[in-house]
Length: 257
Image (spheres, rainbow, N blue to C red):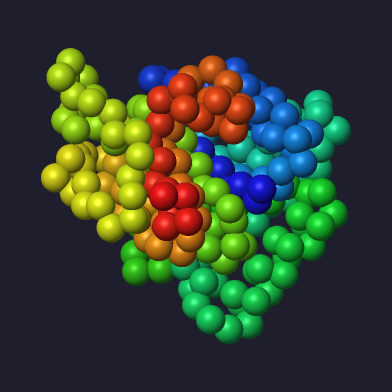
């Protein structure tokens, strides 16, 4: 399979905002396993802004755009460097792709971006994708990396999109409420909007509403979408080998019904 994996900031960072290197390493170990099984993997990774914020203490006030530009520029260097070192332990090659929303409009930029990712996959290089936050501001921004990962999955005709969050999936109520039930399967056309919380994540721009919107749109393209807990041990392996016993929410396609 060709699998797009999106890892959110809440999965990659600890409660104090620092990168969780142990979890990063565990996710990469699982991606290495997926590659050994013959799957192609594209990784969409958040975390640059959160990473950069911990690198520099700014002594003067910055507006929101300036903070985003500065911290993403600092953090992306550290983030991709960590990915390079961790993947190298598995003798695996990675390449960085920084993109913008305009690159997904039909035309030369779309074709060039797709061709670049294709040649990377053909040569056994894992694309690591993130938004180019240094130039993507206001109307040029993706809603978040959930939207970006969905566009990547559609552009590359992926078989599966996995959105890793810090909860198991979509529940019938707030996940912390004992009576809330995990919704394991979502058939095409099923409306879950009444169950979706609008609150955003602690370190990222998204939330479950964003994941639900992305999943619904990508499902309509015939791509299976899974929302799962990236903090669970071996979650990626379990989703492939034991999906029926692994907590997650799967947006299935017409052909899977």
